[in-house]
Every structure is written in C-alpha cells, then in structure tokens.
Image (cartoon, rainbow, N blue to C red; front, side):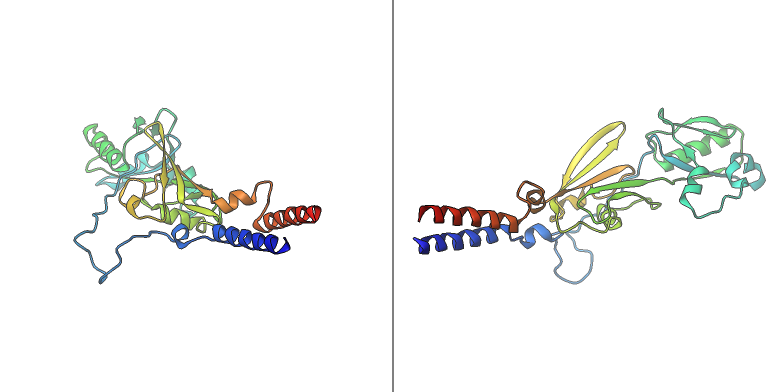
Length: 264
C-alpha cells in the first residue's frame, strides 16, 4: 500500500511539473519570421504602409504660420511672440491649441476652424488655402504638429502608465519598450489593443508570438491607444485561492498523506 501511494505521488508531481513548464512557443516574439539569407529586401517582403493619424477631440496642436514677408505672419503666431522655447512638453502643450469636443480650434484672426478627422497635412493645406484666398498672407505656409500624442499601457508590463511621444509614427513594439517590455507573466499570445477612430471604439487581439499582424493597421500606434497585456495562466492561478505551485503541492501532499494514515 505505501508503495502505491509513493508511486502515485511521484506521478502526480511529474504531471504537475510538465503542465507548469512554459515553452518557447509562449515566450518568444515574432516566431515564423523569414530570417534566412543575407540582410536585403526580399521579393516576398511586404511594402510598409504608413497611415496618417487623424485629429481627435482633446488633441493639442502646435500651429505655426509663415509667409513670404515674415513680419506679416506675426499676428497669427501669438505664442511664438511669448518666446516659449522650453523643451518641457508641458509648456509646449500650454502654447498649443486644444481641440474641443465638437472638433474645432480657435486660431488668432481666422477664428473657429473645424479640424476633427483631418490629418495634420490636410489641415495645413486647408489653412494655407484660407490664408491666401482670404487675402490674409502672400505665399503662406503652415506647420502643424500633434504635441500630446499618448499611448497607455496596462497589465503585465514592467512600467505601466501613459506615455507621451512626439514622433509622428511609433509601433506597438516601441510602445511596449516604453513600458519596459512585458513581464514574465504577460500573455504574449493575447494582447488587447483598444482604439478610437472617428468616434467609434474598436478592440483587437494581437499575438506577439506571430508576425502576420505586423502587416496590418494594428502594427502602428494611434494617439490615445490603450494596450492591455493580459496575465498568463500561471499568474491567474497564483492570484487564486491556491496561491502558488508550491502551495498546491503542499496541500495535495497533506491531503494524500492524511488519507493514507487514516486508512492504515
């Protein structure tokens, strides 16, 4: 009888250990990528498709207006006249134009301008046309930047939080890099992307262990994206009633030992 109990415990422990082991399939990023051959553009490579970001409510825009006669554009740039040259992103935000809930900004002299759902380039061309055809400036040029682009990373990352970026385009891997990468408990096969486009919210699941998603619209971050890294099975189990693998083994061992002693 003791021999059978020992065998049972041994088999039980081995099965638990095998089920608890993580494989590289669940941990390695970008599996299946074609890395053979020299570093060159292959005929099977995908052409990168960059998508322009559209302006949304609560965006803060930097709008700089110029003209062939520089002095004539000064009234259109009141914040530049304040000599705000600090590298502080917070001060740059104060010198920008906040997009209202109805998708407009109010510019000096030009008044209220509808900007929502336009790209920054489309808005630049629209303002140039308004300035020249309205008789405001000769040979006008406009430079517009989004200065509060941000992405929020939550869940199983080393440094969760909201991060501001000034680049026009960043990728999901870059955003995860801001947060210090996933923790060992992050579920790499199921990362949730939450995005708002033209007043609609969409949710997409991303498998970081694959590469097929890298050629789609989810590869690049849009301002105000939220990325949620879900916990893996081990993390979920450890937060339950039975706290850890060691605790589970201890409890099962006690139960089996007690049952054996009672039946002797």
